[in-house]
Amino acid sequence: MTFLNLIGVEKSFGSQVVVQRFDLAVERGEFVTLLGPSGCGKTTTLRMIAGFERASAGEIRIDGRDVTGLPANKRAIGMVFQSYALFPNMTVAQNIGFGLKVAGKAAAVIRARVEEMLAMIRLPDLAERYPYQLSGGQQQRVSLARALAPSPQILLLDEPLSALDARIRLTLREEIRALQQRLGITTVFVTHDQEEALSLSDRIAVMNDGALEQVGSPGEIYNRPRTRFVASFVGELNTLEAEIVDADVGALRIGDAEVFAAEPIRGGRAGERRSVVLRPEAIRPDERGAGINVLSGVLKHVTFLGSVVRLHVQVGAAELRSDVFNSAAYSPPERGATIALGFRREDLIVLPAS
Amino acid sequence: MKRGHIGAWLVLVAGAAYFLAPLIATFEFSLRMKRGEYSFEAYRVVFATSEFQGAFLYSVVQALATIVVGALIVTPTAYWVRLRLPRLRGVVEFITLLPLVVPAIVLVFGYIKMFSSSSILPLTSTTFGADALLMFGYVTLSLPYMYRAVDTALAAIDVRTLTEAAESQGAGALTILFRIILPNIRSGVLSGAFVTFAIVIGEFTFASLLDRPAFGPYLQLVGANRAYEPSALAMMAFALTWGAMGLMQLVGGGPVAASRR
Image (tube, rainbow over all chains, first blue to last red; front, side, top):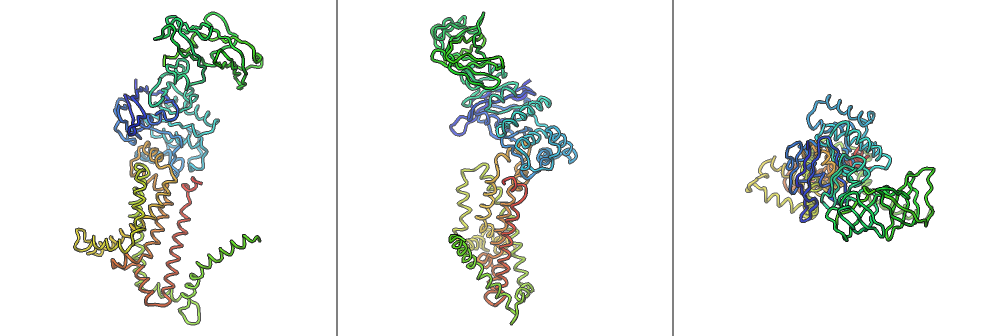
């Protein structure tokens, strides 16, 4: 059942349209991420859900109720900010209990809830500390506890991990996901970090230039990007120029080699040029067999990336990257060697005509 | 010691002498009321007079009222301008600077003209009205200092995000202003308050022309008729000002200031 519904939502600042006709339906308890580059409108969309920005057009519904014109303090929404936004004049306990105090809850209820929240974020001993006495990771945990303490309808996370160092970011990311699943709270997360989006979300809404490009599960977004932008923004990829040989059987020509897509090429016709993309991990050196497309190229150089070894192979005018899992037994081919690059038909993504 | 250091010390000593010599001389003179010995007789005489007590108390009450009214006008205004009307900042700053440009005598003549017994709002006709008019005059006079102190304190915190964080917790405008913003700009408001206090305690023009029994006109009266007591009063006024400035430094502490360090 749809819990949060954005219907044709738009936002303009003067003549500048920042968000254009945005439709998104979020299920109860779902974790949806708005992913996109800086300035794509994802934070503005989140701020409209929170009530900090008024939508220029469209409708925002929470649990069936139209909240488009409702002020932020009446929406029962929990928000976590990139800059933590803890109240500097209040202790950790006062910060967490603030929303409950505003709601007029009894002191004993507030105290019990604050203790529960502190235990939840695993900071039970820091109740009397001030925000400036905490690390960035601790501050963001407190911010999360503060947002959750009044039991909001929806949790909004505005790039909450961006200001943290890499190690803390990873830990907190897992904690946020675990908490969200335990509490079953409907969550909208904003990030420009594809790894965060892919690892955290039930679904991802990829945005570009104020518009929604694609909504889907992390697997769909990564493996079946519907637009050139989604393909290029999410994950690494190789782009090749191809010519359609037979659209009905998904046949294309790349240089001298004929390759096949798993499905017919929608809207394609013979002779038409299309861009095709391949993920580096989908390309396997020296793999052949039934249903495997093969391209031949010259190994230019090899990059060691720890768990992965990346081969840079010149195929015609394009340089393809192929990722091979590293192991002690693996030794890459010599530089300059001619190697065959195999990939499954399902891994060949034919982009729509631009 | 290097030559540069000696030069710096000479400048420092000369500067200190320029400020301290008149002060020491005034203090020394204030102690000479009893012939042939140093004493605090002038201070005792000043404290003992009912005029001093009345004028000082009147000005202290005026100063406190000015601080409360000034803070209540300036804090929400500066906060709102920063939060919602940043484009109006220049205009508001210009308006707050006007009391430095328009002389106090011009302001008070304007007030008398506008609020005289023949006007729609005859504030000068009653004691309470005249006291209120004086207080509002002091609010105007202290506006440049109060606004700047509050605005600088607001610049040091993330007003927008703190406001939104409080809103997302269900807080309304008044709760946000009094429970989040004000405590976090406390040092700025108090700095403005102490400057206001110092201004009001020594102010002469407004109080004299509105014929109010304030400390400023009392200082002038004593200065015109007595020898040692004016020096004692000058020292006391000086001590008050420095006390206010010292308190300004002290109130810069606390968790909010620590978070900025």
